[in-house]
Image (cartoon, rainbow, N blue to C red; front, top):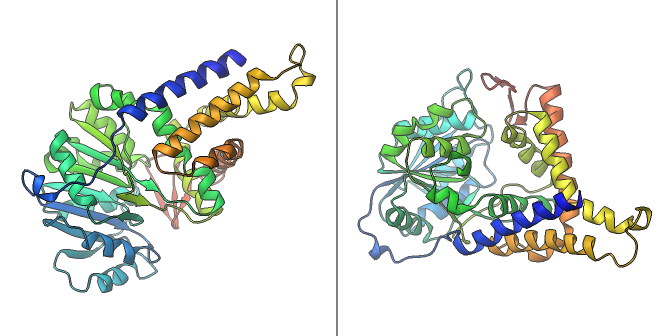
Length: 383
């Protein structure tokens, strides 16, 4: 187990170091440097987002990019999301609210909303962004300039995650550990292998023709991990996938307390392992071995034969794990000192994994915004 833990940490550390030097950051640019200003259709699927939608609309309409339309789909909200958005826009002619149609059988809610949005968008670039994503003034200009510079067909941003409560601080930054520590961006950008494909549904920008080539959201209509699946299709079709860190220009506060953190991650985590409980259990055990085992070894070393004396090896493994967490936090503008709580973070992720498995066995799928997503990806049950 010691050899396995050491080897795993060395590999993760190597990928982390590689990404620190090669993973792009979104950077502010002068709008005048752009070759031209393509029309961008900024599209927001929104369901019961009254708490955040006003700020989101304000920030998007304040962009310094001069050629965009903003379309919000009100997905049958019960909290006045659409009306709040209209009031915030104050008749700005760049902004439109459309009422979402009823969810058809077998479709996932977000995929259906994005499909409807794409059907009315007029832009050369389709930009899908979530209702809780916050755009600083020059963010859209920077994004378009990078699409033009890289000639990307799909350009995805990993927003800077805003975390305030302890639940957010201990769990949300683990997404950066996975992206920076497990996904070599060199493979994502420079190989055709779909195993390196990834994307973040919080911010996905498409060249319109590329979106049509992959089949749009209709191609993933029943998939809860539509962002990653679309990225894989991009690779399979020989199109160009590019990604970047949001670098505080694009940020997001996904959750606000432990229940929302737990349920939000439990919604997707099992699907990330193909819906196989056995694989999720193996992944949970893997993270226990590399991030918790060294701590257990250090505390109980006197009970383990031939492991007494100066505990240099478990301490070294602990520091290795903490360093990986700290580097990913620094790279993505999170609190570096929160890395010290990595064992607690792993335990909380274990709770999330078991929440997902409980939903799968008890209800047939995760519970989300009044909908049960079936474990068989061919049915969505309204509730």
